[in-house]
Length: 220
Image (cartoon, rainbow, N blue to C red; front, top):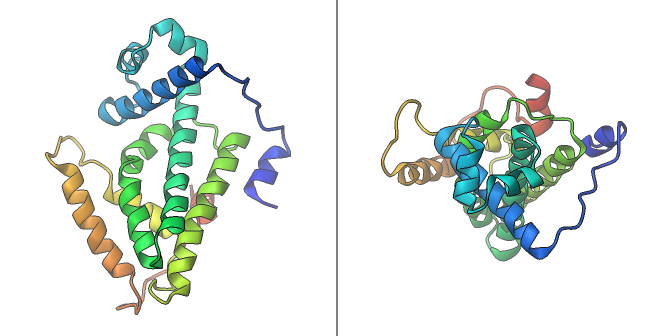
């Protein structure tokens, strides 16, 4: 049984009411602003600052999101969806399988996964059907990129999706207590070093076993 099926057993996936075009644009702007401000200031950033950044009034924000937890929930969905989009596009548009993997890993930096993961971990219902569906889609998209690189003989065979996503999260997490100038420049350098280490043939034997996202969830 898939993660989505397990989640849906306890209830149907929520159906969002259809929004007018202007309302949908406002909703997307609020989610984008929340994502940006949470990276900059943390998950407890004032909601009026998010509204100001989005260019909407506080009433508009609360019309779309009843409280902070609901907004965080939708930021999480947005980040997972956008990251899956990037994996799918890389695989579809790159002729070289390992280049598709490189493109996805560097693109994932733009989603600020390393900064957002620890901020969004608390208060998010990990078993919510929408999140289960988003996780399944993300895992399938990243696995497809890795499988293509593996099948081409360019990706070492002893790593899995969990290994890759943990590494991206760790390498893109801002340094604690500092605002490192040109941080993204260093991130892309370090990701390039990491990607070189993923190429086959493997130069060393890794300790432990390859980790899937399910493995990470069970351990957490």
